Image 1 (cartoon, rainbow, N blue to C red):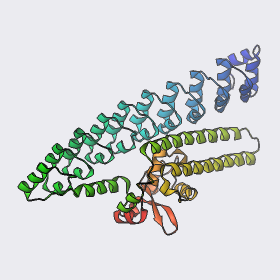
Image 2: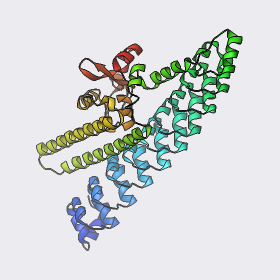
Image 3: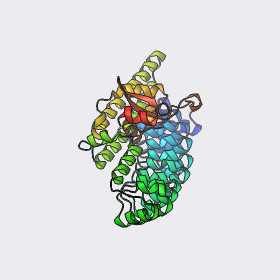
Length: 407
């Protein structure tokens, strides 16, 4: 209901009269005053999408009552961003450039939110890793200090560090000497630490130096060969990407560069945000239909349109970043994800990329989905006689993944 002040203002302000009569009229008003903006949004939160430069108070009014309105704001104020992510950290995906304060608030509430941040600050990266070391693999271009912290917390994280520094290598093998199998070119100092710490780990040393070979023979009677380097690299590839050695070698020539993959990931994330924004706006538009059947039809059409655009976006991504999966039936995979109660529209490009590469992922579930009911388990893509299909990671053993997934 309009306030007394709004009723009084309407006596002298035609813009106020217009929005009190129909809040959507604000779309026809050039540079509406703060009072007119507030009057319109108080009556209908969704009309904020028609306001070119809504004030911070108006943004807050909309997001406090309907946090999904964050999708309709081009440049939400920091306080507005905080309000949305504190209600639900997943709304971070709707914010193009969240401030560090907002990033910290979201990650503190749920460290997995870091996957929704294109460029998390070093402080945010540290907080995420501190809360959950396993989240390290979700961080794009982690800082050196974060790499070290992640490996100190969990040595196996060395698998996700390309060309690790000696300091990071040492942290990994001191955590567990067997982590040497994930390091392709360990320094001599790192090799020495492993050799002195664990005889069983010594054969996994990649490219041992002549001095290390001599010491291995003197200490344990072990003959270390350079061939171990190839075995270590293969083990690292198998652990990090689930690829079989044969497929990895076959795909070298066609494999896109890291830069191409990164650009494709950023582009897909941007496209998903825009697709969601269009969907929310379309569903808001449908609310104004007086005919329930027509309203339901419009909402259904908006959902189908979103699904179609998501499939197209994923297909384009596969062509650019995972060309070996071009034969996948993306539409079928999306439907299978829906059956598992996955909120496909909330998946990040990095998650889709991991899925396409044969890795097990824990995609976001639709609101209200119950993990206790069997939902939310790790999922991965596997090759079947009928083509690629979605499987529960727990149902596929290690040998089966290498033989059937061919990722």
